[in-house]
Length: 93
Image (cartoon, rainbow, N blue to C red; front, side, top):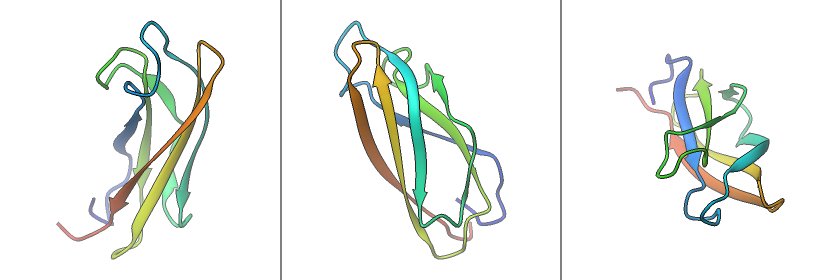
C-alpha cells in the first residue's frame, strides 16, 4: 500500500474459521497496531471464500515504512466470537 493512498479496500476472511452454514452476524472490531493508519467502518462482505464470512473495511494514510497488524473480531450466527489478524506494509509503489 502506498502511503498517499486513502480508502483502499481491505478485508479479513473468516471462511475457514466459521462452521459451514454459519456467517458473520456482527463485526465486533477492527483494530490496527500501531494506530497511525485510518481504518474505516467495517461491513460484512461476500468477498471471501464463502458468502457473508469476510469483514471488509477501508485503510488509508499510513506511515511510510510501517508494518501494521490488523485484527478483526467477529461474532458468527452460532454466537461464537472469533479473531483473526493480518499484516499490511506501507511502502512507495
